[in-house]
Length: 450
Picture (cartoon, rainbow, N blue to C red):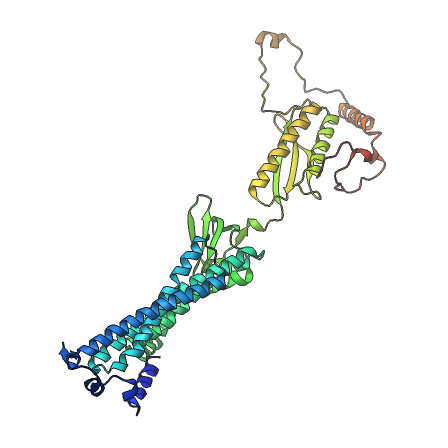
């Protein structure tokens, strides 16, 4: 770019119509008063005045470009004056653009006043550096504005992939701007890049080893984008770190833990480490033992279990096609009923609320049926030594002949007696079928609204 500008200026300087376009010494001596041709610090007054005028023109162009660009950006982005972030961006973006335009104005107009070669050779590189820095600054500010617009569109879409891509796009664009800016800046400062590139080629092996982790992290970020193991806002566990995904960059992923700390995980770990994504769950499982007293009659236990099943059928956030409610264990001080539930709640707060309602309904059900909840108990027997010695005979090891067969026969007869009328004695019960909530008209008792 700098070379092309020099070629253009040289062509203009050697043009046959130079007196019409350039302020030369001959033109000044013929057309300007004598005192303006007097020298001040090695340069005529009229040239000092021309420099001041050019600087003023550059500032005017700067302001004009800023105003025009700000109005254009407002019309494109449909700026809302109530959005403080957008207002700040619209103020910041035009500033470097105006600065670059003002610098370009100086670069074009300064050669027209035929400055001494030494001064021009000093000023031109400085202006080139100024323009390059302004362009880099404009690229960074423009990237922020593009990212803001992309974020607004991503927040309105249902797809969460764009929420992950927007921060990555912002960082990638800034990296590109920085690389190209560095190349042009080196050219403006007359730094030869060829020897540097050659040096990188010689030391390429060492550079490859040094950049190994960076390359792995970059491909890790590509893997996250393509494979989509998680999205922004997901609740995950990776490498022992649990929390919600806050951002995904080119080098690392940031996770906000439930202690409100931020853990940075290199993306290379995501390629080889298991990622447990709790946000991808279709259901939220809850397993609970409901303990009731040993004195509860069997028919009351059956009614209690079926009542809990009916609660699961009518509650709005329970999975209706799979649940388990059965008398499950004889524990030390209670009969334990297994309640195995899956919630379809979208978040933890809703799950806690629905679990709260469900547990309250179980308490109401137990109260209406007369089922008592058990609590850890222990029976203590006090033995009186005198009464113990004079009490009934101790259990003897001697047994009458055939006692085992008699006892077993008695047990079979009792079972035969209380199960003789059960359907399963005649027909094999079919597999359990999960039924929906039933209303009173179908003989299932009162049903609730699901």
